[in-house]
Length: 205
Length: 245
Image (cartoon, rainbow over all chains, first blue to last red; front, side):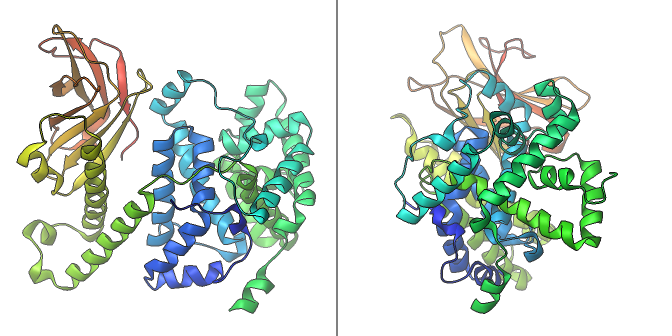
């Protein structure tokens, strides 16, 4: 069984950009490498959002098919390749989450665990993957409870800022401030993960 | 947006949580503001890194095989398109996007069919009619168990309107009850697509009468009804179709 390592957020040979170039030339092995690198992360994210393995599988497949057939175009100005893939997967998963049948289904199921960030890994990854996971989990733990809640509602529940304000019964300005402060804090704590990488990538070309 | 640098909006934008009207405003600003472009990229890095903190789960089996089969089908069709004289009549008549979508769906369909058939409880084989259906191009509609969470179904619709339904997770019914599949069409009442029972394992594989065009169908659902069948749904929705258009 394939497991996309979270460590894929680090650069590995061949570079992600090179994989995309090969995919544009129709090289299926490049897509397979990209899937092996990030499939696990995409599926984990999709499952976290939709809460249903079968629907998460559909999101996973759709994400990589869209990356292959040009329905989604990568723009290097918008960040790294995995961020782009996570964006596709997250948007597709939110579309599923917002569909009426899914909402009805979820209402009848137990609430999706919200503490997944603190959960023990179901799959033991490489040491680097575990370290990365711990880094992100610790960064999230460094937020206040209301900041974490705002991030959770925005990113994993797919609520807009107005919907979050309504859900929490807080002024819109308060929600905006919480999200901004949370993102600024995370930006600092995760600097090593998100620092600009164009130089690294160009050197590999 | 009144801020010189709309930092709050950038943060919300990166999380995909900004309303559409404000998104355009942010994009316009970022296109002209280098400082905000850098900040947005960093925020997008934060958002893209959030999934790393999740406890990883194993990839589902066969997911890559389905992706690969779809990719190869599209590649195969590209070759066929280069030789139009060798294509079947329906391929010549269809436009490229429709054919691509149909072939992709066919591959996923066949993989799904094989998986579904391999999971079937002991019972009568699907037979040549179902096998023939599985080879025709079409699309798949997923039905989720809105009223019966453990239930799920796949509706396979061929381009010529024929189709069949694979369903699992429903309870076997007494003689006087039955399940019915409904198509709710725009501007008209629901149309019965199939009346069926499930086996002891809660599964069924049934032929479906599909309306002329799924594009005119607003909703698809499965209900439990009195036997032999009703002309309109009276029971609660046990399964509902996810968006398929």
